[in-house]
Image (cartoon, rainbow, N blue to C red; front, top):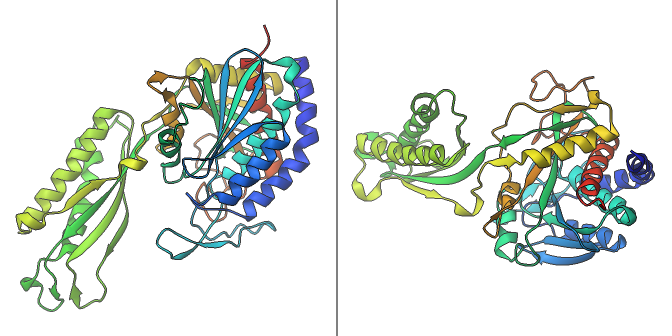
Length: 424
């Protein structure tokens, strides 16, 4: 408990500076794969802590090394990218950034998923543990990961040798803000936490023509509409009601004018699953539905719909290691009263490429992500509740109160690292 008291004092002394850092990050978001300035800012902060850093790993990914004698290796990971959303939070440090996407289109950018909180807490953890070297021994690896929102950044870093640059770690830690938990409270989930995901593109072909003469054409818009409707039956009619799964068509693009039947329509789909069997069933069903809906409309064999899976951003379900999650909870309870620490009982169908850190060069590594509350509109832990007034993640008004969230995140992450690396 002595370390916990000292840690609280240290976090308190850093908090104003970390909130200032958060506001800088929040006001200057960079989209997935464009995190050049963000990563450089984090590099500078890590180096001020005496941490050796490697840049440009899998894009703008960074790896920081803090060694302090013999002992275990612990990975602390943060994401860095923002979302293409126009901010409407009303805070005085709101983002007014517009930038180019990969196609050259000018789009807005906003930290609407808490990655700015994550990065500030990441730096806070680095500052704290670097000042507590007399209490731990081993190595801490700080991983700043790009492109989490596209579920591609972890894979890019792995493909660029992330796993080969140092030995297999003993544990990997991450945290995520959550707007259905009271600000500054902690929620720990054991086992399955978030779903696996894959994305695909469906190109629906037809035979274009005049909108006034549809009988002389094969309308891909009508076919796409039938496919969208039929895809909804995969979860509702093919899977057990007790099997969590999602199939969402998030984008449909086709046509140019009301009186022109186009030659093709492109749909973008995300699917969420909790195991490999469900994943394969969903994909097989999508392919079957596309084929036979097209045939039922008389689409010729040579222009049947094409289903393309994007392998670069497919991730497995995120499963928290129970023993590691318990260490996080124990660390939190050494800092806070029981009322501030909750077991999260429900999984969510969102996805995270932190899940890829579990299979480290063919070896299974304990991983755990914990939640830090970001809701200042309620007075109790309400994990997964619909009663909160706080805008959700990916909402243009998302603006958590930074001080209590960062304080709790840094405190629990630092305490967990120190516990895992404690001198015997």
